[in-house]
Image 1 (tube, one colour):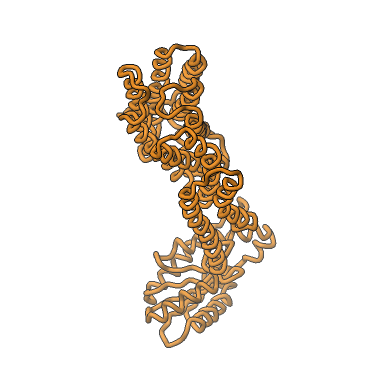
Image 2: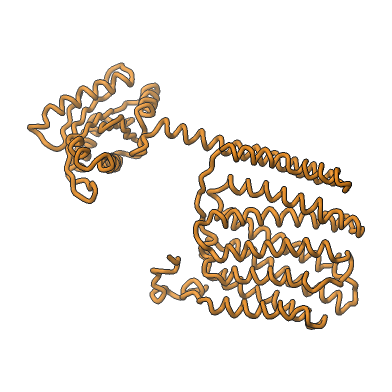
Length: 499
């Protein structure tokens, strides 16, 4: 189902951002943009240098209005990523214009080392910031998976850098600054690409905007790698296909902005199951060995080993692996603690947790009231509707009891059809009012398998009006409940007996 279905667009008022208050455009705009870009990319190798410059600038500038469309469609609280992408495109275009100016107008061999490089670096920062914002918003419930993706991406980036880029850059005597910039860019692109791919694999739905964003990062990584391998540093001469790769990346960014699913792109994604399995432990162990293995392979193959990169990457991966293990372990401990303290059917505190809370209140010298509630007629419901029907009834009872209590009071399922209520800092007359609210709540039938079911309850009430521990209070309330239950033949519904 589309996120735009069910919206009464005609009834919505017009505002500053018309894209938020009108029916989003169909595929026509995206197809027109795609046709323009594919045509420009296809003819690029056959153009003259001046024509290539015009073609490149037209296609790169065309992405700006495309992302503006996506920005106006995005809700106000989700626009940060689109603003970053827009800023990146503006900076990239400023870099392109400056580069062509230095090469064509001023006759320099290259635009490297000029203001064009500054704009390009700024654009990369904006692009990474936008992608990270998307990852942080959509993957906030899958932190563990994103860490795994980052670890894998760093290993892939290490292989690309150590076996492809570093040997070539050293062979052509590239400047140290250029090597560092290329290294940082490759690692950042592989990291973002890995995280976006993780979001893609766990999306559980087709989100075209996410596919286009992944494609854009993939083309950017391919472009940076290709340029580093085939372009001589300080030269403006480069094969046409290197520019075509970058133009494909621009096209993907523009399609991301034009896609209607850009609204869903910035919504929180699903939370995949995360567990510390044997396979996950093996994976984390291999991740720790990945970068040292890359260094060893380089040494065995006679290549120069980038010791600085090896040290930095190992120092970066090790904390990530430890954080990953700690995160999975802490989540397992949290789940086990919850299972040990809460009833799986009603999600109410169980007997053990209730006793802990009661003892804590008594230890603080605070006045408490305990209500022991046993349902009347539950066995008949369980026999007729089965255990699933009985569970439905227990859940409804828990909800109604909870609505009768104050903020901070506790209702617990002791087991079977028994519920116990703890009210701290409550006087006897307030407890009487509480019992009346419970009686009123039970008058309305409960829905079990779509049918109305009427049940009663026997309640035993006790106040800690004498020195005793929590277990003794519960026993007195239980005894009072049995006193009330003996009267159910004469008094149907809810009955209360005070210990």
